[in-house]
Image (tube, each protein chain N blue to C red):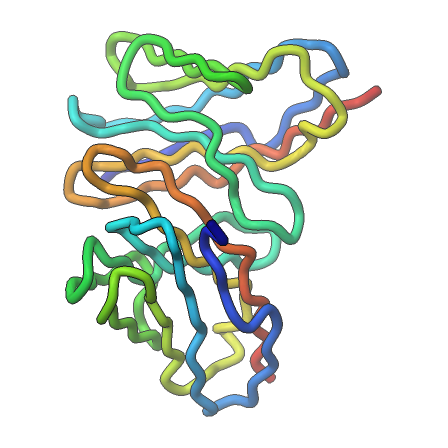
Amino acid sequence: NAGVTQTPKFQVLKTGQSMTLQCAQDMNHEYMSWYRQDPGMGLRLIHYSVGAGITDQGEVPNGYNVSRSTTEDFPLRLLSAAPSQTSVYFCASSPGQGRYEQYFGPGTRLTVT
Amino acid sequence: LAKTTQPISMDSYEGQEVNITCSHNNIATNDYITWYQQFPSQGPRFIIQGYKTKVTNEVASLFIPADRKSSTLSLPRVSLSDTAVYYCLVGYSNYQLIWGAGTKLIIKP
């Protein structure tokens, strides 16, 4: 199993540009989440999904959209990038059905200029 | 308002046992406690999870007292490679996830 994969690893955007961060998992996990981690800080939940077709907002959802059309994929869209969105983005999945441990991807380092 | 609090940093020495405590209020019976380890430039890695009393796996133990308002991650016989940031996470039944701010653990030779 590849586990949780994220692309790209690095990205530089100009203010106002849009882009999609990709996340995929091959473990047939029910739950998937997106986090951002600013330098020297902890994790903040952006959006999460408890299954295909179901998404909900986390702590810091503004400026981001998600969709979950399949169990495997959970892309994160930045609608109009702002410098405040400069961060490292982590995608995570967890099995569900009473098991809540999360498996994280390697992260995408995003810089908005 | 749910909150998870842990020490900002800790130091220890190789071969020692390290205990990191996390305080979490408003925790209910079905809410779970999880600990993660994070190295620089990597995603967090799951260490251990529990609901009550004591849980042990091959790398750590998790102690949760009867009132469940705190939990303690115990790392036996640490080595230099255990230097990392350790996060406490409380998962509530409505899928609300409250992360601690992380404890930076430095292991000295």
